[in-house]
Image (tube, helix red, strand yellow):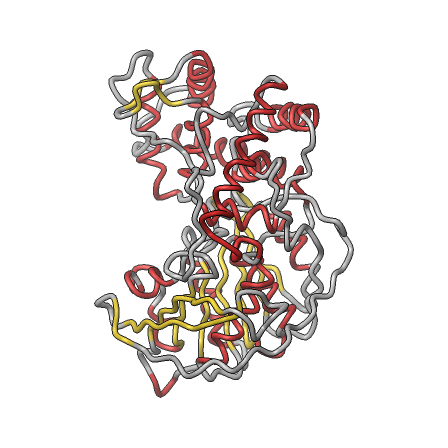
Length: 463
């Protein structure tokens, strides 16, 4: 998902998003070759504040890989890899053949946009004080630790505001979706196609609500449900991550590529976290050692891709011994764009230590092995006390008249549980729900058979 959270003023109530006042027309982009893989890059200006569409402008970075088979070209395919805060320009510019199937590259102009404030778009969201500090726990055990967390979050937000300027109030998903229609117009495309992954499903669905007539076809893979609220965001992910760790343990018991084969993976992992609670686990470059939180979030991320599981098993093997010489876990942190956008779209409803303590107990019950070290918790805790008013709090989408929308969910996805896909598809009239039975975060990066079905949907939508 990378990443998102909070409470809405109108949770579960359909909200109609006003189509933006038309900004002044964007000039045709001036493209330049970039990246060495056949892509072109440009910038497109959009309003800083969509309430003042003809006011101050900001700049979006855009990359494009033109269709390899011009005679059979279908049109523009916007891609967004997730986040919030995930840049798309590098995917298209630097690794198009590794990321996108040939059938997409042949038929579409694949377009990556770094959303406002993200990546190479300017100005960029900047937070001199890092959004995460391992000295400030996101899992406070005392009221004093909770107060320290709230104070730290406020300091982070204030540093972000000083460094980022007025953009800080306008980096929500609705504003970003409106930007994409400016890019569409600059590309002279009447309709566009969408491939949104994880958080990119919320961005794509929001675009479809605002501009349904502009959508030819969309694949929303790793669906997010913007109605679940902060508590369920964390608890649903805690439950699904525990499920996927169970699958990892079963995989270890049956495959020779697991470095922990023949061992009780779940029991040893619980013991590792218990030791980390008492004292930091030694790690290269981290004299104080790594914490249980850092280990937990690192394992959570490593569960995303089943292809990474052999390496994960080696790391855990090396760090599970009583006195490891070094561990490969690095500090877990959150980048600036992820935190700022996340607090706009998924604001936390936690107000007191008692609130958070009750949710920690719930997470431990749902996930006794993995403890609820998940993105949903990271943003729920990281947005607690956040002083910047959320521009797009929890709300229900009501997408009408957008054709050919395919929502894709996995039965064993640690970051975007299948239940969120069930919720999103109910908010998009006429959408279909494709559920794949494998393991990992998004089918696009884990299941070639489902990817083929996604490609077929995008290619054949108008037939």
